Image (cartoon, rainbow, N blue to C red; front, side, top):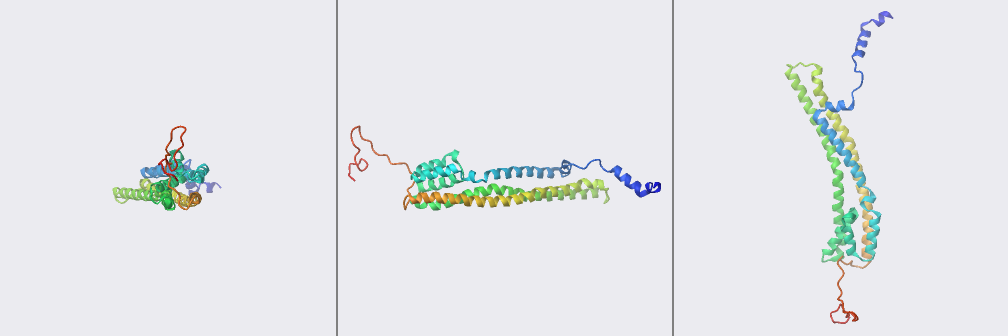
Length: 264
């Protein structure tokens, strides 16, 4: 036993154990190894988390088409009060996917010489514009998912260039500890870039599918509201202010035919 404990192999193992670090490296140590590029990638990771939270809050059925707005618009349209429906949609406090689409369509109908015949086309075009707006918010996540691994590759290139510069300065020979810093930059930045890019890509795909599902659901609501407008007549009227009828002095009836002196 005494000989075994004094063997060179045992002594080497004891020395390696004594030289081993007392604690493992922290996450901040690894991030610091990535230097400037690593901190930029960490900044992108924070930005993408914020964007994901915003989109998850934004892409909800009650955010795109609140039930109260659906009821108010339906009531106004059943009364054939297209002017009131347009005013309601244009109010800033009522801004939503539903009101922006229907408001844009009613505004176009009010300005078109074809009147209500433009309603379906106007709703379709306004819906496409608002859907593209939703996709732009989601696509910001895809941009970060694309840029993060490219920044990791940039860090890898910078680290390798630094390692070769160290070798050149040492005449082609360098100790491992002299190369460790540059190699850390090369590897850590790649890891950080992939850690940001992989989940960001998955969340982007999920959010795009969510946009498609929600837009289809809101499109059904808009279709029902359009049907209410068309049910009032074969050609829906344009949302315009009510005509002003002439007033007559007290005690005298207003002439028939709008006060122009003509009969019906």
